Image 1: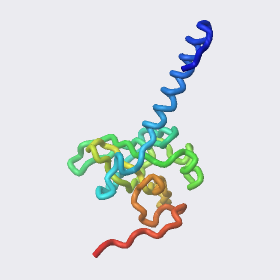
Image 2: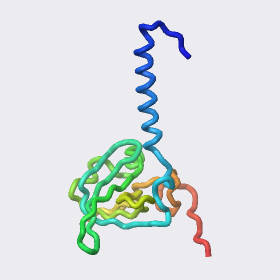
Image 3: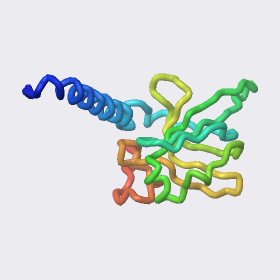
Image 4: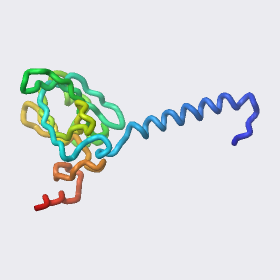
Length: 155
């Protein structure tokens, strides 16, 4: 326990509490792939972008997906960090609202309309990697930064 003059104690306690809350929130916000997403539940989503969140620790693309029955759903697709995405060729300005994307990824375990995105395909056919196998996502050879070979399927 710190012994401070009474005049300094309340200010220091406030600073320490604020620091703990900020750090704790960041730790809770960042997670391993397997904590939220299912590697055995691949999903392909197609639809226009409705919102882009370029934030740490993960960027998010929101898209409107039309189901086969015609019902519209709003999906949130998690990408890598903004720095990782920029190194892979995706910038804040490369994903415009209204752009029709095809996203290959993996569904959330809890059934929410969320996915961890692996690849995005633009209308012109360009495909960019948006995930990060370093977080525990399946190693399938699509991560250009992954130096290890994907595991062979068991027979």
